[in-house]
Image (tube, rainbow, N blue to C red; front, side):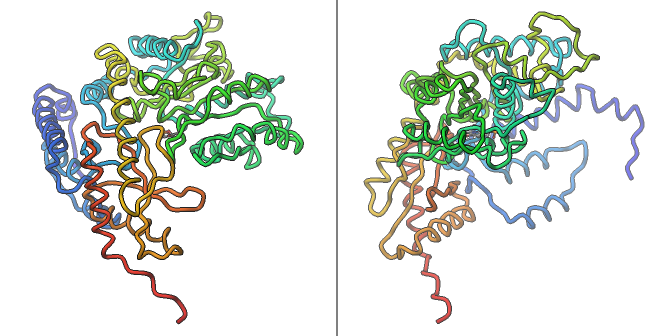
Length: 487
Ligand SMILES: *Cc1c(COP(=O)(O)O)cnc(C)c1O
């Protein structure tokens, strides 16, 4: 065992090692960014099998005051989200300035459960929420906060919905009947999880079928609602996806909002991926009707170029955000403070929370909404252009015309028998993963396998996407039909 005396311990906090280590680290990150922009990494995802990866890190050794080799290996071995050929999942390639703000927060570590624990970030959050509430056309008095991820934000919103809509005090008395939430069969799985966490069970998910474009079929709302009621379920909320994760297509917010109003239920928008489209002058109409929502979430770490994990949760009526948790923690909160917007833990799951307000505030103050307008518009435009190229190329097709920067598509060369089409997409995607030149993923729609890209890197151009299709065609040459079993 290594021993350390207190002097040595204090020495670790001094500026000298900090300057050296941060110079090394920031030098490496600057290199990483350059290599991504110029595609100098041979592979955008250096895929290795889990056991091999484990063996490497288990055996890895370095001198404790010289972490450079560690920094270097981490950069080499991780997914390069800024590389134009990285088009897999929805995680943002963070803007360097946003990552610096998060790094500052990591060092200062003011956990802002109550105001005095992190004063500037608490008010920055409020200011950012006001900016976004204005963009959505929410009335004066709309409020919100930042929380750790879309999954938690959706759960928090549904808890608020249950508290506000039910005529009894469910938080203190428990539920007294079967409850349900209406949601598209294409919604993110975390909605299903939230419903189950809230004790509603599987029957609490009232699935609404989707149309051919994978958005909610609004003509089915009434009958699904009535069916649920007939089977004894009180529906208290409906969730719209903006967009749904698999296909990237947006539900009709105005129709869902009108339906919720008519039934007296809560309308929540899961805008984790693309709620921020409201900041794109070209695409903001995708969010038409969002002003009808009772609550809406947006992930900073998806289409807003921020490091994970940070999600904005907005409430059209500010007072709703205070009613979710009526649990007393007397050592933290004084009674009777009017509204108390600055004591964030009254409204969030978290007690201690990262200083996530820093990155939002810094980006909004530095670049205004112009940054997000430019980014979202560019990435959504690119997806449309890509879908056209897919469609016009022999034997390729898209699942649906894209509305966002997510595209699902598949390759159907004639030599692949129709019974093997799904297996073929999966085989192709596995080959691509192990090769690692491009990072693409897969999804299943109506039982069929599709390849899927999310265009997150601002360096991705249409020629990278065309090259990726050619790359898949070349990989496919190695494919052979599976032997017929039992012959
Ligand atoms: C990504 C996503 C989520 C989950 O958000 P996390 O921040 O990953 O927890 C929820 N809903 C939708 C529509 C998403 O795209």
